[in-house]
Length: 144
Image 1: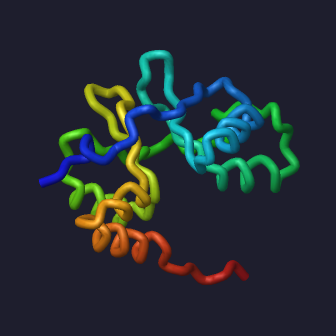
Image 2: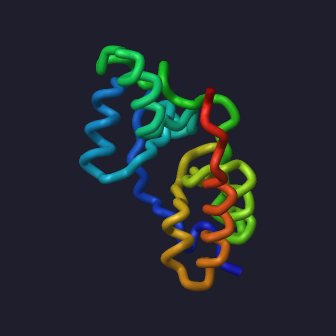
Image 3: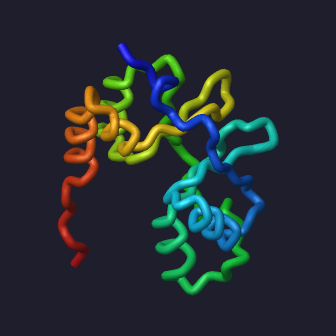
């Protein structure tokens, strides 16, 4: 069985809680990524910030680009995997939680990141990626 350590990206771009939304957006642009883990000085994950968080919680609200990332990140219930987690389990977890990116932690520290794309490019996991994406992409009713 393949484990997350076999497919995860281990060179993960991170930010800390005091960095600004503008700094985070610049990193997203530079590295062509849509989510960045927020870590403390001990490399423990304390949140996640996505391009959607920035758009909806900052730009759409007319907030200042110097807003600290701590004000727009998701901080509660960060779903995480471990390096020895089976890839199938991870795909199921991502589908259940409707997330496209899974931070991988070991001994409380961030050691990697797995995205749906990582599953999709591995032929043996293409079905899992497709099933996870179907669960994640379930359309919601428009707000009235």
